[in-house]
Length: 101
Image 1 (cartoon, rainbow, N blue to C red):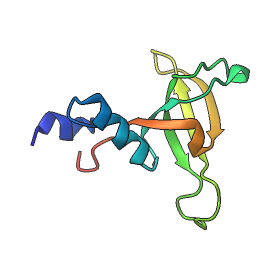
Image 2: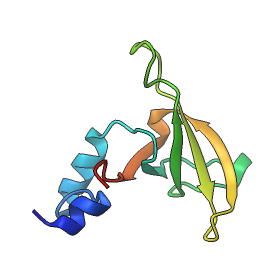
Image 3: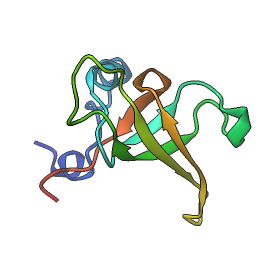
């Protein structure tokens, strides 16, 4: 197993189709890095913006509730640009931290 891939939580083995399938199958969780699937002009965030899930509001609740996540979007210096509550339909997981790190 490629330890670099395991350590950084990279998805897939370089095959873009495999990576896409894995992303769609991942249920988002806290500390995942996500890609925004739709623009949020009220927060000056275009589709494709990357953020970090800082809270999963539905992880301990009834599974019939819609998913809801608090996502922090930061600039290159780490300064928060927006803190937004999003539905799971609005985001895609692009990176997951290694739970063993």
